[in-house]
Structures are given as structure tokens and as C-alpha cells.
Length: 110
Length: 115
Image 1: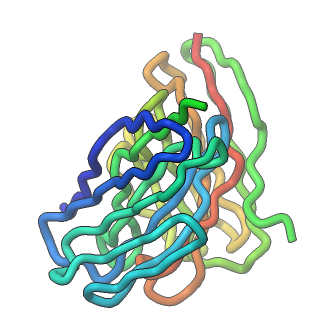
Image 2: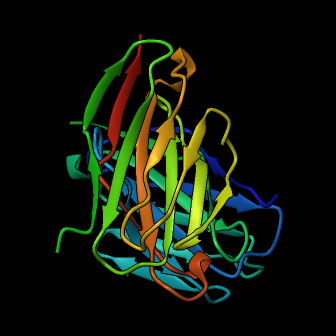
């Protein structure tokens, strides 16, 4: 079935620096969703991208959907300690369920 | 609005014991899901349901059972607990329509240890 792959698995970032995490699919996706899970918490929906080439921003987070709708990225600028957690992308596995990537776990050095 | 509520939050079981993880949602969502998350890993789908009376297997259904008698409730049953089932279990729900286009709302999780 359809799977989404995320890289890197871990991202260690100096506070104030930028970083990007990537999500790739072998098949075209109708949409892609991003979730954030804080340590010890549950996944929380961040955003959904639907259109080819779509770019959406949430404060310091920029989400992009590739032109071919097979990849996506999350870019965080000026990383803060509040950005710590695991970021998951998810794409449709069929009409009823999502396929989640393995996640990128972000740690921040103050 | 409570959203998705899971009970218990923590549980320790002995090998071979059985238990039911409870999940209820008050958003009138038709679609509900059970995931497990092993330490440092992603989410693996155990079972899902598209409505009352309808359930289907996910990636890792062995050792689990579910039922969906009402829209609100989607309990997960472990019949003979094994150490490999030590994990954090998340229940989630999503709105009607094409479920794969809808965001999923997660409960706080049940942390289960099998000793």
C-alpha cells in the first residue's frame, strides 16, 4: 500500500537556527497532513495541503506541497524550545485511513 | 467539548491477562481509529471503523479485537496480553466525508506495560 517516508528521523537544532524536514511518497497524494506530537503527548493536527505547489505558513512554520504532489516539506525558522517534539506527515492510504510517516524528532539546544 | 477520551491513562498487565481499552468521542464522528506507538517509533494502525457496526483491520491487528456498537464508542480488546504489546495506544476520530481528507483528532493515549 501507499507509504510516506520522512527524513531525517532525528534533527538536533541550535536554538535560533532553521531546519527542514521532508516527506516523500511513491504515489501521487490527494492531500498531505502534518501533525505535531510533544514529548509524552498525543499527535495534534497542524495543517493540510491539497493543491499542487501549495505553500502555507503558520507563524515560523512553512509547509509546502510539491508540484507533483508526491512530496512535502516543513521548514521551521528561528527554532525555539517550544518546537521540540515529533513532526509526522500523513497521506491517504485509501478513502478511510491515513498512512503516517515515521516522524522527525526535533531536539533543541539552548 | 471533551473530544476523544481514552481510559485508562496507564495500566500494567501480567502476561496472559486480558483488558479493554476504552475510547469515546463526542464529536459525532463516524470514523474512528486505534493506533499503537512503540517507543521512539511512528504510529501503526491496529483497527479502524467507518461507522457503527463496521470495523476493518489495519497494519497490525493480531492480538487485538474491536467492536463498534455506537457512533461514540470504539473499545479495543487485548485477549491474551504479551510483552510485545507493551506500547502507547492512541484512539482517533475524524469527520464524515472522505475520511482521508479529514484531520484526525487524537485522545491522550493509554500507556500499557505487559510484564
